[in-house]
Image (tube, rainbow, N blue to C red):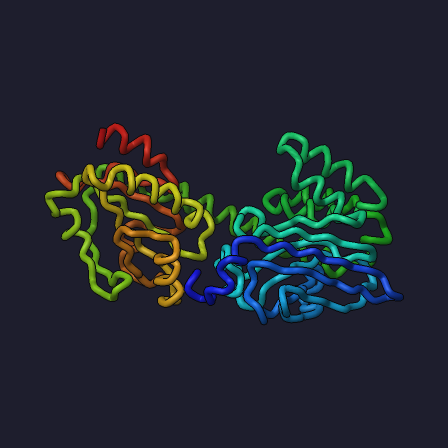
Length: 360
């Protein structure tokens, strides 16, 4: 959404570097930071994950800086957000999240690279918990498990077990085992959060099992004829799928079911852009159907991401999702325009490899 920024902010919008200093003054913590890539005057909020996402403090960006003052009675896991996601240049569809880290006595340094969406997460150093956490998340995948085990066995970093257990929500016995390794004092101090965490993990495990069952029961439409549809594009002009398929210049059509709030869908956009650029002149068209409910944000996103193919909007209650058996997104179909037959029905297929054979 580059259009939401004035020109004077564009030069600074590529990088957000936040240096957060947390110094203990009695029971108070002072959090200071410098910011690039967040709109001047933007409101920043610290939220406590371990206390029902309670907002701990808020402040505004002034002259590229911000400051929080708040008490720290005990370490807690916090998230730094821009209250308005559109105030952040990069990745405004991630709810405005900038970083997560541990609020604890000491000096905390946070470095956010706003132009790198993969960086919109953990990245704090300077205190015991944050140093251990950062070491884990930046480690080679093969080394992470050993580092987690080392951290939760250490009296000083034992509290990391609460974050570690959350990774095992589909394996409740394993998650419970990790939580049970907390020291008795910590288990007592964080009793309420542990109870909430276990309930949430049970819900997520149930949802994951339901999704797995639905995917197993999903009817594959490969070999069947496509089902026609007509929905409005970003200019509010209805576009009928059959008109695209029947165009003699088009040989194959990719049907792409997605939404801006679906991260796997968003991660697939570069791949779609690549295949469109490579095969469009050879007879490929893309017909993307979004489930978004906020029309203006969807239009802005499509424009910002330069999704230059056909994009239409269909509410989640629309008939097309039943027609194509869409329970989850992303879902991708490939239609042969000569026969109307569906050749591919997958979540995220290797379209480049498929099209290389079809459109050499």
